[in-house]
Each structure stands twice: as structure tokens, then as C-alpha cells.
Image 1 (cartoon, rainbow, N blue to C red):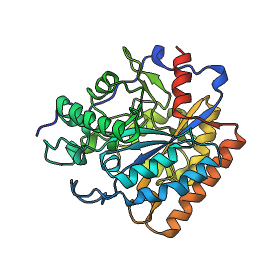
Image 2: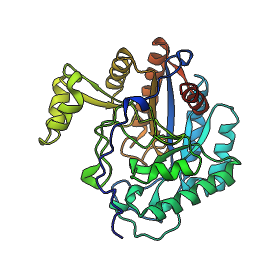
Image 3: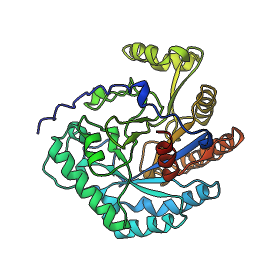
Image 4: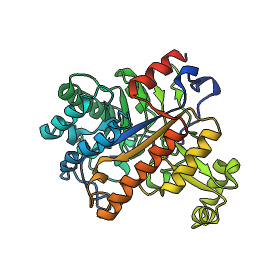
Length: 338
């Protein structure tokens, strides 16, 4: 199956008019998204057979750590999760806190209808023909609504695989927030979208009630003011970006405990707040809670570092006066900012 035309799509930046100016009473906030998904070998070919969701059983412990800090994560669930009753039961219990929420995440290779042959290119849902992408989204949305009694309002394309048709599909189905864009990242080499022109700031999708909240990525270092352009240039040079990072001149830091040292993440938060950011978006994958399922948490020592990352980060956010925001609070503030 040939890609639909979104192959290597360079996502255009929003207009200034579409940027969200958060109300003064919103303050400075952060939100946590969890890519709630099946376990699979990230280095192996994409397979419809890898559908185990055993790591979901580890969510309550992490959820409790968040709840003690007043954080209600948004769990972005994919099809294998919501089609497994034991996983649904765990998530239903987490929703009882009244602050957490369920969103949708589309992994096309394990999401019906199965009309394509799984491949790296078609693992980016935006590369599917628009009708097939929409059909997969319909089945996912229906499964989540049936499992939890309410339609999901937030969405992320697995592998950040947004396409030119995706946002229109979401708006037509009543979604209110997309978080598929990973600011300042480019997946074009793999056949995915190019987000290098996207900043971390939230913005409205023109002509709809949908807002985009990219995963926060911050440039740090002595040359951070030239970060986006300079990073694009050095990315063409083998190991160029790594050399700049090691020299302390420029680092591109996404806000995630996966592959990002806590010291770099804390500096990124300080830079973001110093530059006026009002809402930070954090993210991680649910299988990282069990050693051996992701490249980021291979053993018990990695899991201990994962936990410490959150302890240090949440202490910093508290000292800086950033309060946790729920999905509902973010949407309410965005509506009031119109």
C-alpha cells in the first residue's frame, strides 16, 4: 500500500493569531500524558501479534505517586489496551480520582481494520489512505467509548505519526485536543512528519474547536537563542547535534524521563519558564514502568532512575510555582482564552 501523500510531511507553523493566550488565572501549569499501550520489541518489525498489556498492572503504583502530588494524568490508550478487560478495569479504578482522564492513541498496526500490511512507513498513521486512517480512528474511538462510557477528548498519533488528514478526522469526531506534534523533531528520515517548525506553545487548529498541545521540547545551552535554525543545520552533519550538546552550546531537550537525564530536563524547565512558557507538557510510555519493555528502562537500576527523575522534577516544578493541570482544566482555559 503506497502512502497517502503525507510521507515526510513538513508541518507548517501556526499563525500568531492561532496561538493560545492563557487566561491570567490559569497561572503556570503542567500536564502529564501517558502513552498507554501494548508491550512490543521496538527493534523488531511491526507485528499485529505483539499485543500483551501486562505492564498496565504497574500503572496504579505510579498513579498513586502522581496523585499524592495532585496530578491527574491523561492516559492515551491504544486498541490493545481498551480491548483487554483486565487493563480496562485497572484504568477505570484510576479514573475514580476525578482528575485523571482517558484519551486515544492510534497504533495502526494493531488497530482494526487490518487492510494494510504493517511496515515502518505505515506505522505512521498519517501515511495511510485517509479513509483507512479514519476507519481505524472510528474503531478506536468506539472501543474507548464503550469501555469507559464517554468519548475520548484527547488524541495522540502513535510514533507522532500525524498526517495532513488527521486533524480534520479528529475535529469531525469531536476531539478537543491533539498532542501528536513533538516540537522541533523530524521523523522524515523514517517516512514520518517533520515538526521542526513547530514550537512548544499550544495553538488552535483553524476552523475547528481542536487545539494542538505539542510535547514540550526546549533548547538549552549558550546558543539556545539560535536553537531551531542551528539544530537544523548541524543535524546534516554526522554526530553534529551530539557534539554541540556535549560542548554545552546547544541541546534539544524534550520533557520526558525516557532518555533525558534529569539535570538536562530541569535546565530545560528553567529555560522554558524564564522565556514565558505557561503550560508544559510531559510524556512517557506505560511499558517503561516494567523493566525490559522499552529501551529506556532495561533493568531495576533504570527503573530507580525513572522514579528519581520524577521525584526531582516534581520538586522543581513545585519550587517554581507550577501547578498540575487536568485535561479538563486545559480545555476550559483554552475556551476562556478565545
